[in-house]
Image (cartoon, rainbow, N blue to C red; front, side):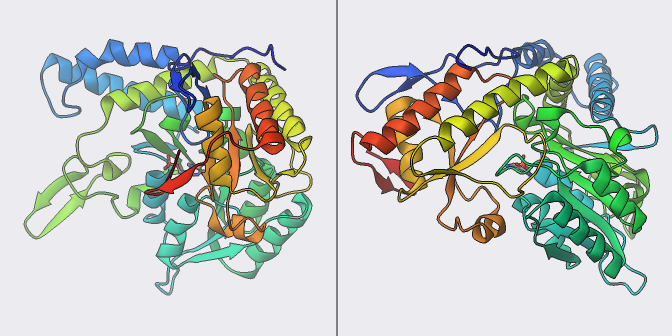
Length: 422
Ligand code: PMP
């Protein structure tokens, strides 16, 4: 795998990291599931549009017209990228968390006025758990065992109550695993429930189609999709979004304001009060364009090669255990979580950074219920790859974990203000 090149160029891949022994080394970014570096083409697009931005939707000046056109064209590109149906709506948000909180305000109440019921699995990132918990309509079901067992658990639970929505991860941010989306959608729709897919980890890695899978909504983040921070999207069925609680109250979301009441716009304007992030939205659209231009088979093969090398390499080290939710999930994305028996995950991560210049994530990955159920209350270590990752970086990580297990850290690390320091 050492000679697998990056699939697309990203910025920052030549960053030099100072090591604890005073030398330096090129950064190996194996934390792209947290935030992925911008594609070179996205960075170029940002440079191109930066001089052009101005007030969107409201100004009569030339640059306002240009910015409005760029913003609306980007919205269209983002919708096409996730296979939106012609009557779906694309709402530009800040990130996945924003998108899911927005949708939580739009799930219709039940006939008796109680919150619409939402079914979630306990494998979810907190962003796809807490918004539903807060509405008071959430039921959390344990996922795991075989895929078939989880599907039949979902089927049984959906038959018990009048669920409005099943909110499901597209790919776990802990293990990279997925349930078969089209099949889940059939099960939910048969029971009269809609499906929201948390696409934060799926969309950048595999591509996704609302029309192709039949899912009703998808949420994802620009900063995990090779664009800078600050843009994301919620795409899906128009009716709930046209009538739900406006996400933010303010200018742009209204058609008429009186001192005694307000008429709100339909979606998307209804949920986009305030001046929008034009540059971030254009950047996200540029990332969508670049990913859409890739051959899906090449994207899948690149990631599978890197993921397999990570899983095989790490599992071959004494005391290292790779975490999974399901016994038979198919085609996981390039997110691999592991533990090193008897060692604090924070210490291992600090060692990887300070002695090898490798960036990984440690902790509980905003998925406390899952980590608790799997017995990793003390956390674990996550390595993740993307289109800018090379096989050499994966080889470096596996070699560094092996050195850690065989020889231990070269220096003593301590916790200072929540961070590891030498
Ligand atoms: N869902 C999943 C599966 C994620 O991986 C993340 C980010 N770790 C989120 C939701 C939240 O994304 P954001 O922080 O961009 O809102």
